Image 1 (cartoon, rainbow, N blue to C red):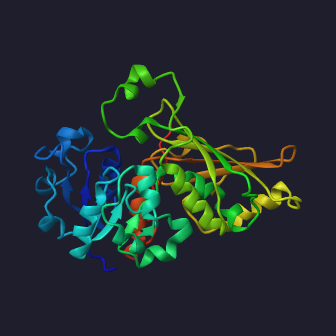
Image 2 (image 1 turned 90 degrees about the vertical axis):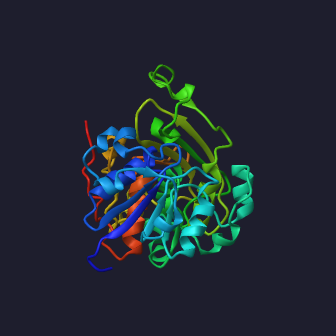
Length: 355
């Protein structure tokens, strides 16, 4: 793409994912926010809703507006930070006007509309668009993304699990006759920016709890991704937990290896080293150095480490991401960079925020 700015509209600008998109796009040297869209906060200045953005946007784009297809059609790309079931119609309108769409919701993550309906409890609003949608996990499916106008941005948990296991599955070394076990902890921003009792400070602080046990909506997305990587059916027993931190996901994944096991732990590590050797955003940590959510906070990095338990024959893989950066907005901007032929790291080289 030329040096001209990419004009971007953010739909769902007042939420956590929408706010992260705004933060990242403001720092992007070739992106320009041309419109902010939101229903509940329409007519309000962004700084009224999210005061940390005061002074960063020009007056003509600082007001959150209702969705207007005529105005949105002036953008080159639209980021849809909307709940599942809401994005599809909006995406259809935008695509018909030649606007590229990156959907941070679940509407375009699946190839099978029946799977979407089963897990999201509603028929897909635009099933005819599913064949042209690309799953936007760049480290795995970059070449498909390049020429795609409709991106289904992956979910946060599926991102952490798929990146953790991709080298093993691609090598055909996982025994998928038994379920992969994924134990994942997320910060509270993963629940969205809303007032609900279980998200109140006195309810969530000093406590951790499982939720969506044996039925979380990200289960089929994880299974779809793992099956594609392995080229065989994969199942996952996925248990998410709500953790008293603002942002971050730590996934601990247990997978049985094919027997007889002929590879040492060092040889297994070399699979990850080779698979991700050119991937800036994936960091394989030194042996026995385990990922911390704080080490990726505010960044687009995914930190990974692994350990072979020879006693049980299980491989333990841990990954850490920021759920609203690599798990949402950062990955969306990474996809934008690919689509528009920009360096993939552009606007995304933030050093993690710690302490």
